[in-house]
Image (cartoon, rainbow, N blue to C red; front, side, top):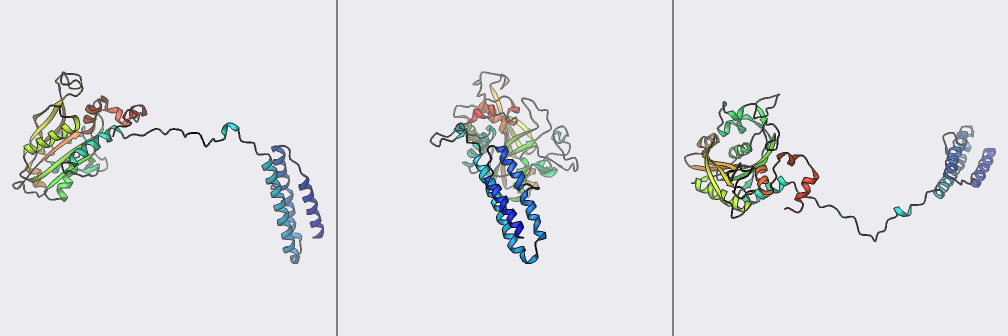
Length: 342
């Protein structure tokens, strides 16, 4: 053991005198002394030849030798660290880089405005699943099995179970509200819907709706008209003209579509309004008595109205965006145009 201790002392002198002038020399030191086949590993291997009664003392000598070599290596490495480039040093007195302001998506902006307007009239927000069953999407809303809206060309059905589908309108949320609540009911139902259509500037396979439902004693068509008049004036301004046209929807009777004077041409006629000066923005009507009866609501006691609008159509008129595909392409150049819009 005494001979090994002397050998270790000689190695320590050798290590102490080692002078590395380049990073390559530092690496050479590591390999020679601390590598897997280096001197430190070799000396550590001599432990097996030391008598048992001397192993403890010799182990301390080995640990000190290992730490001595490692400290020398760290010292050499530190002396050869490349100096920081003066161009990379941080001047903390400089102002920070500006952070680009984010923005809500234009559809979210308009949806929030629609919801805010109807909330001021006492409407609560209701939501439901986008994957829906046939009853809530069609049957409960008075759409018979042979109705064109059930055609495969319009609806995405789930291949594993055709009784389930991607909802084609948020009327299914109204159905679930009537199923779980008793009148008075006053809700709006915003959400995404799906229809099997070819994607173009005017159509998409998914879009967004906001539908409304109000059921109570003595609700009339006049209540419906005044509610929608208020919405249009709050959304588009006091000078917008409004007209109602008779229409047909299976779940309302009577039914009407609502037009407003074209905001793009001012009513003079353009491609958006098809040169009529009017643009249709929503459908509406009095809730069909059969729909009320489907949910155990006494149609002899209660009446109600419903309406539904496409958020993309309102956004098109609000911001004059003429291509529906822009809403889902995530083009930053398009989205930046709405920075600052609340």
